[in-house]
Image 1 (tube, one colour):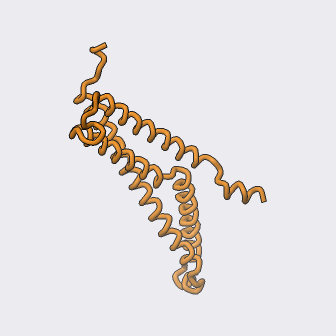
Image 2: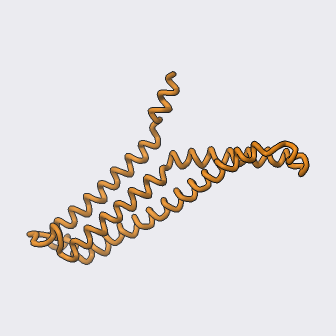
Image 3: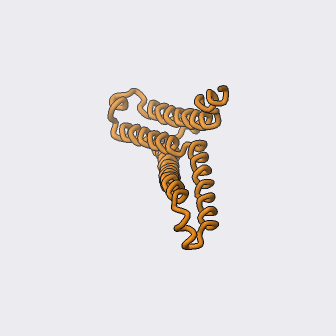
Length: 164
């Protein structure tokens, strides 16, 4: 059985550091997407009513009524599309979950390598460390699944409105 054991350095490098890199990249991607989508939604949400309420005389003076209608329609469609995707994909929730998992992994790693916290004086600190890391990763998978499942369920508000 000895040949099957993974040593501390290999586990830190292959599993822990690999997971840290993954969660850091995933959190950064989700944050960028969330901030970009929400910023665009805000800008379009402001522009659409402004464009709709531009006096017709101004549009006629610049010969823009048809162009303005097309632009307003495209902005409105983009706004609805982005809001729907943001609600469905839940990038903000994913960003926070990934970042929290990354920070938990970092904390656990530092406690282990410094022999601090629960690892100080532990009978088998490496075994406890592996169990803690795997529990964190497993817990994140459960959270991820919950976030995705929540986005595919109809909201209570939407279901209540449909029933009325």
